[in-house]
Length: 56
Ligand code: SF4
Ligand code: SF4
Image (cartoon, rainbow, N blue to C red):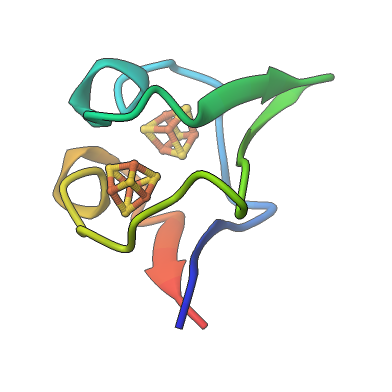
């Protein structure tokens, strides 16, 4: 159940510093979560103003 960032991402950057393993990175005009480093801690999910971060 990895966390993912959806197309709703506004690239505001608010989630980046919430990740303890620094696995949220810019990806063109959006941000993405590098799944191989994500520990599924969920710390980032509540930081997104448009609820673009969810578990899949
Ligand atoms: S779930 Fe945790 S480890 Fe994964 S991207 Fe979010 S803050 Fe980082
Ligand atoms: S907080 Fe949400 S809108 Fe902002 S960069 Fe992260 S995923 Fe995108």
